[in-house]
Image 1 (cartoon, helix red, strand yellow):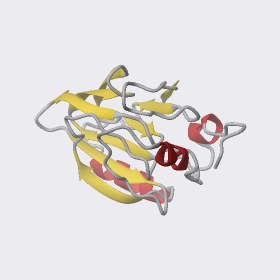
Image 2 (cartoon, rainbow, N blue to C red):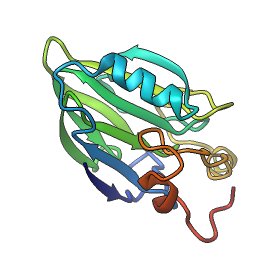
Image 3 (tube, rainbow, N blue to C red):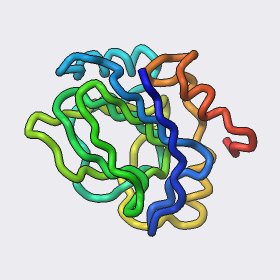
Image 4 (cartoon, rainbow, N blue to C red):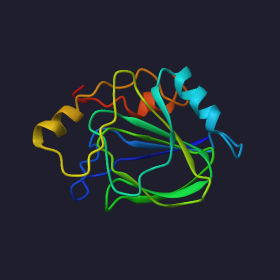
Length: 169
């Protein structure tokens, strides 16, 4: 499994996360329908609030939670990192881990596109569609780091990639 790490700078009104990289896991599952597999995988590593749907077709981010998105079915082009971010062509079996503050939106998807999402314990997604206040952005950077990588648990790539010296959590 190939994992790409990307740090996004602020993008217009989207704060992104200056400390933690987005992780893009390619081909976690090779099946055309990984919906239930992602749900089981995320919960087995302590991620909660599992939901099934798509990705909104407008730019947004979350201040109150880190978020993992497993592509259960279909394919899509997702814009990650705000208006000046990067477009990712994702397909069933791929997964994207978004640190709090990271902008994301759906630029177009197949009819059968389905995402499985989840959050670390005690974190809840709040949908933000405008610039955060200074205090809100600072609080975002104090969110606790997850105890486990949502894909590979205690030995997963998030554990090293998000072990950032000076992270204010």
